[in-house]
Image 1: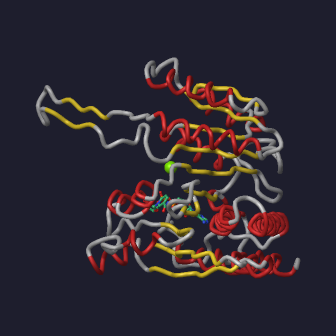
Image 2: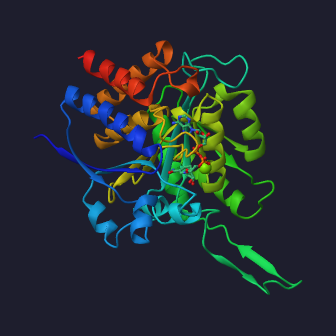
Length: 363
Ligand code: NAI
Ligand code: MG
């Protein structure tokens, strides 16, 4: 039986609207080649244009409209000239992550031939890691408040919140992921020397979960030295798992060590598939380059590859489609055409078309 996968397409703002067509071109080419049936539905909300027209980022029934979807393919949101960033972000993307329980934020970071790493002496293949960030709790909580505001006695508190369920599930995901990779290694980010209650507890959960994966090697590192090693010895990392705040920092630092932000993809996953998962480039709407058709489409396209892989559970046609898209990306990164951030002068469309052509032609 051929399954039809329902994809919600939300381009959002700025260059989201320019890279999305290239993402869809590549995803559709791969779907056609590997016999995956996709039903794409485009929505114009979760954008600042929608906000300007309606006073809200999304319609009241956004959750109902998206609930039957298998995945959300998302461009970027934000247009600070008309909507403050905290309103556009909390009114759309952060609602998806929390209300769809997308508790895994997965970000690969890899060096490629044809892309200069800002780290001296790093070549293609030197960096190949997966950063797994907890996406729903931890340091990013809404528990807290301000008292005696505006007085000399003013105090502010914001509680970090770690649940056993939330911690165990992200750790398990990281160990399961490592099991599927060649090196089978997990690094757990911690700060149990300084944060003396929650982080020793986090370490204990890590040790417990690690005990059930005797085939996966692991270590734990304090976040400060871990950041230093991302720069000094990035080749030692395979899967890296971290709390929400530490993961946020690492998942910008990791891709930054490999080259341009125009390459970095991400997945926000609800692994149980009770809700749709969301796939998006790491970058934002880039108002400074929007309208010129010069944005690098690779992050959007690679996010689409992760989406197809997730839809078929990391095997079968979706995995083949993923691998074909990544191979086409590698080939175009190695020999062009390249957008400006990579030192070339190709347009978004030209680079996207070159990748899509390689995906189709290899058939
Ligand atoms: P940004 O990622 O949009 O841009 C940062 C810099 O990277 C800019 O100079 C931009 O031109 C460049 N850049 C980004 N993507 C590129 C690509 N594909 N190709 C070539 N160059 C690229 O981050 P910024 O400027 O901090 O935020 C702009 C807006 O995007 C804000 O409204 C912000 O809230 C929003 N944003 C949204 C995100 C999302 O939707 N997940 C993530 C980050 C920011
Ligand atoms: Mg960030």
